[in-house]
Image (cartoon, rainbow, N blue to C red; front, top):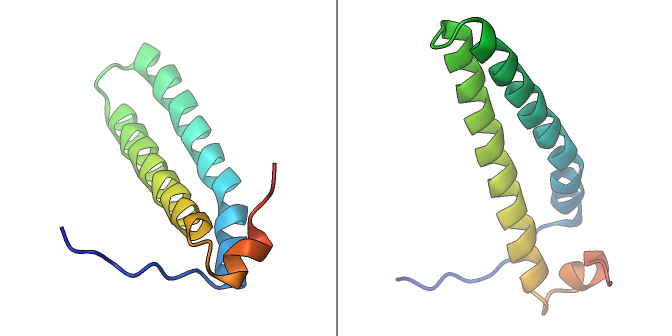
Length: 88
């Protein structure tokens, strides 16, 4: 496996990633709600399939965003990562 150099994200990119997370979660919840409601009315219908695709897409985008933020937080040598990492 090739090693990759860890590059911290720009502050603007980190802010954008943090702002978009609730949007992805909201999309996942709405897609799940549609999936559950439509599955009762018409199991195997077109709307159920489309809602499933949207749920999968929002979950993948949320996971990608979480991984990017996690990798950024691990780049502790970067001043941007030190400034923007929340201390608990």
